[in-house]
Image (cartoon, one colour):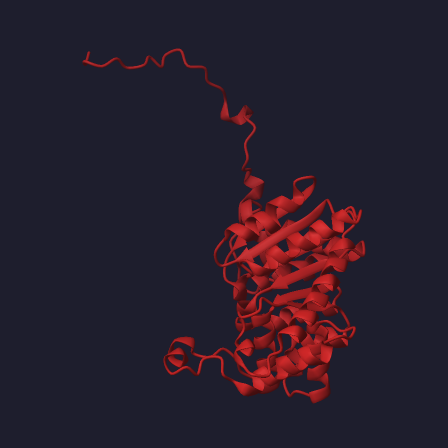
Length: 318
């Protein structure tokens, strides 16, 4: 016997694993892929656990929201545009699975550049060296003109951008979320933090116009949130701070005015999980009812995967 006492395990209480309530079943595990398998088979073969299970649940919630005529609001940041995901989001809107788009100013800038010239995203590090970063005059002219056109009127910033792109007959407008939202039509709201976008560096940037247009968009966004009366889905795609904050304020207004915005489904999808999306999107809004999900992954993989799951579940449900 050693110097230190050992606990006697001879009298521990045991049970049979077969009789235990377990979290994982053989029914939940994945099936291997096979050559020529369909997309539906691929999704069905995913393990029915953790994030794969959550993804299927989220897709089902979007399908049900469409069926029940509840809002599905997709908020997104600039990286979603640069990852080439706009055609997928536009298609979901055309199919009726998304009823409102909301972005920051950076996303609108990338959308305008892709629609107008078929390219976007400058080399920030290189152009910062000589002070040319953000100095594209045609980009600034388009965005700042849209803001001035909206000033004092009825159009929000996003709608004014879409209208301007339609009027200018931009060559790559088919994949412009601003333009296609205007044509569908569904709301596309742009939520700007003054001083954060390259177009604010230009002499034609007018703070009154930008602020007026973006504030109107906030009220339009809040109206969509208020319609989530006992249902609906909020997607936050790659906005770490701005849009989660916008959503939280809109949610507070909606409830303040007596709207029962509860039992909603929220989801955050990003390459890294940040504090504000996890709190302002995933957890706080559903304290009194609903479900919140978080997914960590690259937009160019996760957004097409979610869209595919939505389309397949919709087809399966007739």
